[in-house]
Image 1 (cartoon, helix red, strand yellow):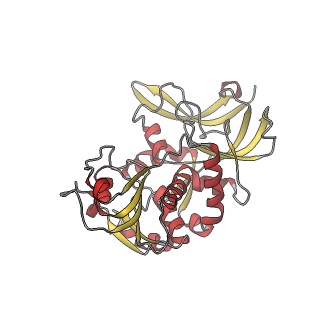
Image 2: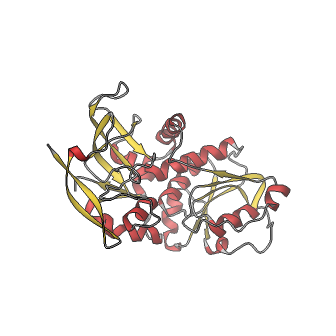
Image 3: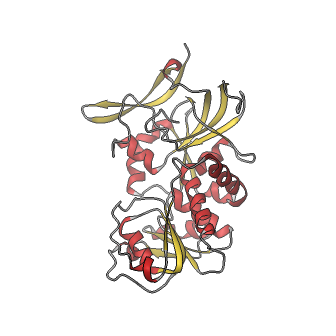
Amino acid sequence: MATFRALVLHEEGGKVAPRIEPVDEARLPPGEVTVAVECSTLNYKDGMILQGIGRLVRSYPHVPGIDFAGTVERSDSSEFAPGDPVILTGWRVGETQWGGYAEKASHLVRRPDGLTAKQAMAIGTAGLTAMLAVIALERHGLRPGAGDVLVTGAAGGLGSVAVALLSKLGYRVVASTGRPQLRDYLTGLGAADLIDRAALAATPSRPLDSERWAGAVDAVGGTTLATILTQLNYRAGVAACGLAGGSELPATVIPFLLRGVSLLGIDSVMCPHHERVEAWQRLVGGLPLDHLEQMTQTVPLSALPEMAPQILRGDVRGRTVVDVAR
């Protein structure tokens, strides 16, 4: 039986220990399709899994990696044939099932024309979530010219893609970050202005503040999201995409009752297939590839254990592609 190379997590003494090792193909989870993985990526959730945080993984040994892109190697499905380029994001792959930090995997969606495997993983779950957030805001009524659109966690993966997408669509984007040294990076992606994340991070002192935002994409949660709710324009919405700043929401119902604001929840993990297809097609035409290149670094599998705590601290800029062959 053939083997493939993977980053495998083991539980040792109550802690997670990552090792790169050969894995027998017979250990692949059952499925109709097997993919030769070319690239994966590093997301915030990957950082949690690599550090053993949140009990996202319950069974070890385990191959993490919630995203991957590659080529179909074997297929018993009428939808896919050997040689088809494919991607996968979500569906709890890398959590309850083996993931993309390996050279073989299963579960997928067809990769859109116009994207390489590396570009697809530069987008990954973070970029897909950002696109779903923009679509949700548009369906809620957001249009260019309505006013400033806020993006929190703007220097991270999701935030960077959101800034680039919204700017390309004609919105005036205000990027929130705690890293002022990245001003040139964020303005290069299309941000018109920056705001210090500390200005949004305190628990709101009153139920309503001055109207400020025509819409927002929030990757932080916690007190930041609570503050955004108090500052949204009348009938504006915020797309909630993350909880880097905490899962608690110290808010009141006053903004909902007196301004008619909306809190739009964004889930890319179990998102229906047709919505994924729409989002990926929008990304192909709506995300400038030069900006995608600007926000992306490529690392080998061996770099992931060291990078996991960095992404959890918010020290990783933009997107990280993982070359699983290195």
